[in-house]
Length: 431
Image (spheres, rainbow, N blue to C red):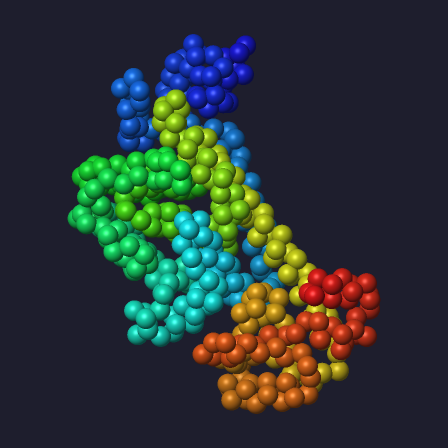
């Protein structure tokens, strides 16, 4: 009876409850028909034993993947009626938060102002060397534009790392530049601020051979997508191929595969979710590294899938709220006595206010959205600023950005809204 109760627990937990059951349960898992053996081995434990890493493809794993797929379909239904410019602005806002979060997780300071500047400088590649965070911002933008990045070989990985993280790593400490053929030559340890908690693989030959297996797993279409993404995410941390920048790099690769195979909005809110669940995230690695778990990654995968699910759930909640607010504001706008040409511009400014998180929309973006010449839009914006007090201008970047001042707009047009309670709720929400 006890053995049955132990079937769904990590081997380490079983060991501490009844050591005599561990060998039998380990064998039942390792040799089960739906177990995937990875061809990568754990480090030797205190008894000089090493184990091949494996994962059981469990019903719970399949159920979580299905829930995630259902959430993605729900997200796509929410996105469908929202104007493309609003979704683009929301993507950019999420991207900014994601870059800040992935840096914060590793203790790398970056401000939203720096990220916004690097986003703007993407239009000026000649400024790459003079712009901090240019590389990481450039790669994250490719998640939105769906550009291909190859992660098939160790050489691919090194090429990506050089574009993505190397400048920031070297600026922080020039000694951390990779000194091997693709990766590092020397050993490296991960420290939690008090003690070393993990030592990456070495020498480089072993890093290369193990990473080659890991990349093959990542690209194996015979393994469920979210399972292989999760396995690779763990293996990248286990191998720890570079002196610095490993976490940022592995999280981006995870995001890339999610964006290309699922939905970019799942991909560019991953680090935001991980940052909020940082202790849980690191505990997943710590438990998977435990010698008593004998290389089993089942529970790491289940935990990582839970992070995906949480990220999607939060994104859906945020977007549903914004979409609902947008419908209410549009109701006010279209029933107002504003000039029809102005309503087109105000509609774009409304989208910027709700979906861009204070980034705003440029004259060029407004002009492209409403199919007018930029000079015409510029003149109308100037006139609208003189006539009303609800055009908000951000002047802190090379290109001015505009959005609707929601409070002033609501106060000026509250009579157009049938339900005053809705108005009061909106005003309190945007104070």
